[in-house]
Amino acid sequence: MKKRIAIVTGASRGIGKEFVKQLLLKDPDEIWAVARNEERLEMLRRELSEKIIPLSKDLSVFEEMDSLREMLEKKNPTVVWLVNNAGTAKMGLYEDFKAEEIDRSVRLNCSAVAALCTICIPYMERGSRILNISSAASFQPMPYLNLYAASKVFVRYYSRGLNEELKRKGISVTAVCPGWVDTELLMREINGKKVNFPGVVSPAAVVKKALMDGEKGKDISVCSLYVKWEHLFTKLFSEKTAMNIWLKGIQKYGYAGK
Image 1 (cartoon, one colour):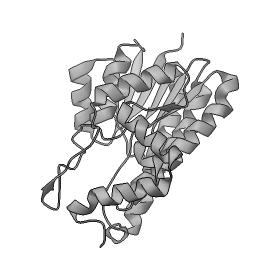
Image 2 (image 1 turned 30 degrees about the vertical axis):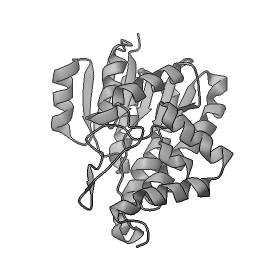
Image 3 (image 1 turned 90 degrees about the vertical axis):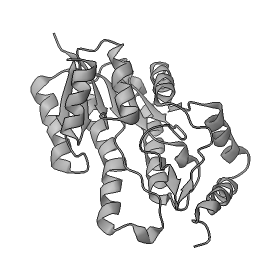
């Protein structure tokens, strides 16, 4: 009998770790936890469950990502959940990014998401779910967070389009679009000033809502009323208006107007 597995990328901390915790409650045979930090992954297994299979991989490197395809071919499981959570973010001017850094960011935030979907879908059955972590940053252009926001637009559009393609197979794809999430990745200070994060929510809240929306077959998951209002705002008014509000909000941190 085939094993029923979940695959979670970016699993060693933050939202990814919370996905591992909550997916364990759904009782898969294994959770393949993917991240670069081998030590963190092993700690995760010891802390949570022997069902966790730690896989130390850099998904921005094609050969390491493709090794997941080889594992699937060898073990031939049923993938009941795929959570594409791995990603990178950096705030700054365009000139703060080296070409190599841009390339790696796009590979990790965009290419790896699409590639892992393609790799895993042949091992999915009717009722399997894909959750791709996008962001509320995808709702409008975000100068000074530009590369990250633009990459999350790709994830949102790709996920919603793929969801339509897979309906005949009974597989759903959900673009998960949280706002600010209270994890260690948040920048607590910018240029010496404490940052205020409006509408910040816990990883647990984001994950709980994402799993519920995935099971309902929704193509987008928005966790909080604050983010729902952000999404509606761009539809009622304009993306440019929302972008200008963002710019005004970050002026005090020394970004706008440089």
